[in-house]
Image (cartoon, rainbow, N blue to C red; front, side, top):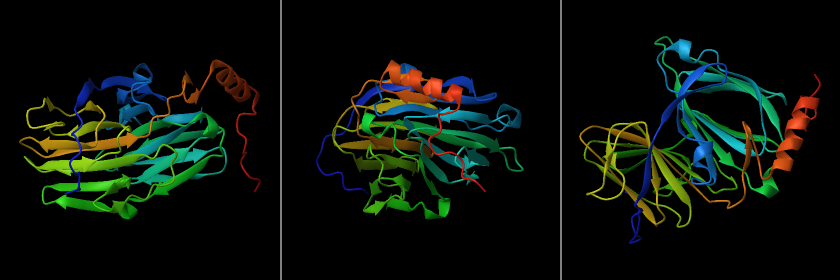
Length: 294
């Protein structure tokens, strides 16, 4: 088990049920949190759960759209997503893969979900805010295939895929991100317990993918799947699975404590910056690094 030391367990600040919505060209998904929760989850802006077994709910995908001032983190668990952008990048994110895209000063891209033979497709997209002095940085990608994401077993009842951060001395492959994030995919067998240290002062949440669990102490409230747990401050988390396997994402990061000005997929610090971004998108000067010539 991770060494949490003697630091206090983080209590629950809130339990937020995800809500159904439609995005892109008609993709049905569940939003764990979004604009209405800002700045409650600073530095995180949005988390979407787009798991489905009905291709009609997702095949239209997310056609060409802009991003500026944020990072988008796509984590696939079923099927795959084909992506392409305005600066010449293209590829496929398959089950177990992660793409951490820093939009920075501007990128236009599309993401088109695809299913396998059983019709299932699923994954999660997290939006992470960039601080004012990084919002206009050059775009970049960290793409990691499933085979390069380590699995750690802190105990016989717990398995953790470490995307970013560290568990039991094992570091995840996504690094050098300004908000110092931790992003873990945790599975606990029935009645198993996972304790994990977190940096005091960092914002932390868990999103339940499957099963039921307690996310503070043995007397805490039981949280079902498709709910988000928002933790109070403290030095560690404690999670206990109930009578069936529990799977959840555990995410934490350093708050920015900066003003947020939000227009769809563009997030800046004030209205003037937003208006400039929209004007550039409309007049064709939004992308600072155009597609290279063949």
